[in-house]
Length: 412
Image (cartoon, rainbow, N blue to C red):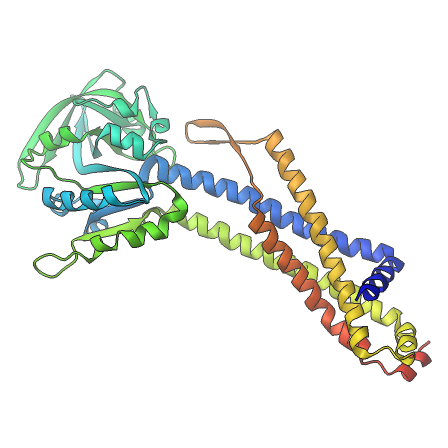
């Protein structure tokens, strides 16, 4: 085997220009895939973090049927005190959960005493909200989101600009409870809140106790429970651990709760899937580049060395050995291109991190992508390239092994 490797290496060096060109194509393909994966992975991780850590959490629990009618913010599908107690008991014991927060949502009319507009209100527990959504504060201007007091409101930017209200102004919120009773309360503007998707949106935030007052609730109610995991990679395990809640039935033998991950709740997940699809497409392009490049080199090598192949075959070299010679050449091309491409990709990622790629998202400026080249990604790409290099060498290798020595020696 050692001699086969030596001979294969010598044969590659004999056609140095073509070998370098082919190895360069493989190297560029590997670099393209790995650098794209590092940049896309960094962007995806950042965006997922923004969605989960500033708005949704990793998992949400609702009463069955709430999500289907969430646009109407139905008050008749809130979790009652008994159901909240059952959920809390299970969450407190769950090893995957870091924190959770309760929200009570409703539709209300917002008035600045001159004009009125509709608003989506989120009643929150400020301390739990800050623990569960650590990036929520980055969306708030003019106030500390974790210190939202009773009697204060965080107004969505769109409404604040349209209604011309600012921090310190007094406004009125009017809401109708489940029994049809209308109630209004005065609130002081504590600041404005930016929606996760940028400009637009009508979600305001008040203390959850203020919602209970506004709706004249005698007992605690919750529209949703947002959960933060200790490790987002344990998302599927955490969902399985919450199955006892999904199995709970009411007196009519119907499910009481529904549990969704952020993937089911956020349209951004479609962008994540698109990035994954692009990643697969780029890998397919890489495979095509390697396959065509190696196949071309090996086919040309066979045609140029017909007499040589006939000579070694006439000297008693077995077809199996000839096959191994050409397979080893293709394998060496793949290994060399992969190693060089991986090394250069690693160095380029280091340079990118040192220089920094800045971008803006909403109110946050000068955000920087931090691409990371994961070892498993490098190993997967390397394995694909080496395997395809080997596969591309099979047909030329078999053709070389099947050459008749007499016919080969007659070749001009």
